[in-house]
Image (cartoon, rainbow, N blue to C red; front, side, top):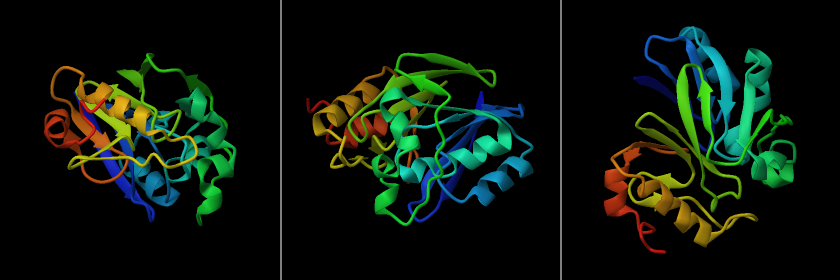
Length: 209
């Protein structure tokens, strides 16, 4: 069984997740977006050994502390190949249009979608979910889906008006995730957790394609 820790970081209150097997020090960090001191304090206070940095997509609010976390832990950076340029280009990450500063942090592992990663004693399935960002992915660990900015609690979904957003792809991605059989806990990039069952009832994009 996995244990999930969460910090809501920065002005955008991006959710940074720390996922590990219960009783294990080894973990993955998903979307270290801001406030590195808080991230480091959480790691130190829980005596964590970070084995990988998993990025749901490359927008600045999700990647802002990627370089600092890699320097602290030595963990490899994972991102979909279509979003790799966002890690080094502030225009593509949208950092140029904000007050945020994102130090370049080139990816170590480029994902395509469909992989099953074996990290920190966990099997992590990667699902390509474009629409909010061309290289958006969801990570499925046991009965939990970390979905970035694809689905939000309460029947909401991510923006698609950025340069590589696409409403049709976003609809497809929402349906792809919510059509997975069973009831998963869904952990979004902002806001509170939700579930497959709740979003099938509430999300206006479900089965709209």
